[in-house]
Amino acid sequence: MLFDKIRKLSEQRGENLKTVSKKLGLSENAIYKWKTQSPNIENVMKVAEYFNVSLDYLTGFQEEVNELEKHMTAEDLLLKFEKANFEVEHTNDNGIETVYINHFDHGTVKIMNYYDFLEHGLSLLKELKQKYHQDDDEIQTIAAHHDGEEWTDEELDEIERFKEFVRMKRKQQE
Image (spheres, rainbow, N blue to C red):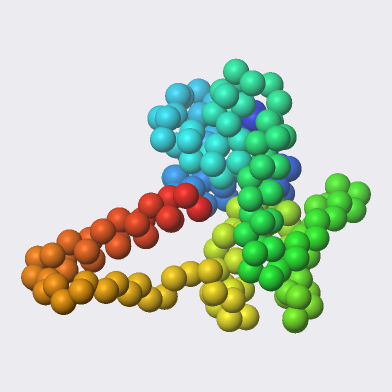
């Protein structure tokens, strides 16, 4: 059942199982082995994340892909693009889903497959923001006034560690 669902999801994307395995950092035939062997949960989680489906769907506890969940993820991505002055247009022409990414000042800047957009949207947005100088929402400088307090090297190191913690937390939320 798990193998069949993964094969079906791969076919919907136009990819073969070897390609999916490689993209997930698994051995070339790993997914094929799941016909007869049980995979570890970490690898199943990678597959679920890659295809944007739940573990319940992959393992058969849920028969249909949760479309609301899928659209919420896409909706979040669309909002991020909109916030950065990009408009995303999604079309479905005879089962071929295409995304057109338009910048308000530069017109159409990217055309791609819908599933690739879902998979690579955040990294693409980062690239496009750099290219079109749209990093306004990222904090570049943090300033603080200490009213004459002097900071030790140890305290300054602690502040740097806290900044890194906040950055990692932000990346996990994306």
